Amino acid sequence: MTDDVQSAFIDIPGVRNFRDAGGVGALRRGVLFRSGSLHELAPEGALRLKALGLRTVIDLRSRFELDVWPDLRHDLDHETFSLPTLPANREDAEHPWPEDQATLYPFMAATAGPSLVAAIRRLGAPGTLSAVVHCAVGKDRTGLTIAVVQSLLGASEADITADYLLSNTGLGLLDGPTPYTDETGAERISRPVSAELLASSFAWIHDRHGSLPAYLHAHGATDADLDALRANLSA
Image 1: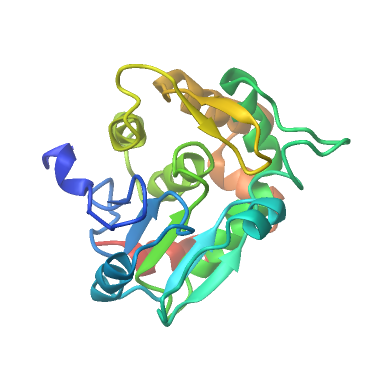
Image 2: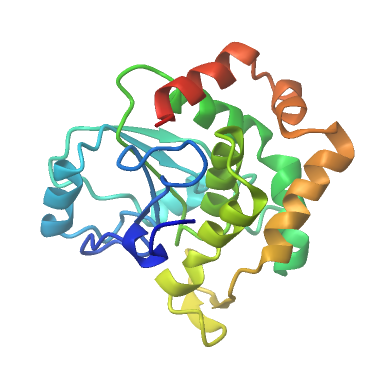
């Protein structure tokens, strides 16, 4: 990336890890943002989102997370779309979320197809931008979704990975794992992301489908959907 990586971050009071996803591949700046959840969004943060022209929020969290930590709006006028990356909630009896990151990333690739296609269609629709894609802290589920969009916009693996790794800066994980309390009230550990983790999601996709577009097509995306995304987000 040619720009100073720190320039991607934007201070939105009450929101963690908020940054511009643009400037990577053909994805232009100022139209697609990524972050943690908006459940602690401050009034000043809402004013800053309004100044960014926010029209759409794509929330990748589970229904359980939304019930416990609903996003705040502070009278913001935007549409919110719930597009869960993972099934049900982390303690679902049939499809529990993997506890370790090395297993989580291939698991996300296996479960995220419908969410990714729905997000691509929404981001390619007229009147959608600017948009924010978020999960709980904007690291794993958001990381994969944004990486897929950037890849479809022609970004190199190196640039996608460099942008993805900024979550370690945005979440204070450069010095290692930190504890947190999840939506169920359980104590957990937030761990840094690594290039190998994101690569394992894409490896799963390529091993089973041959290419990212083929994977998306298998989940219902059309060439017109992908073209619309590129047209709407390209510089």
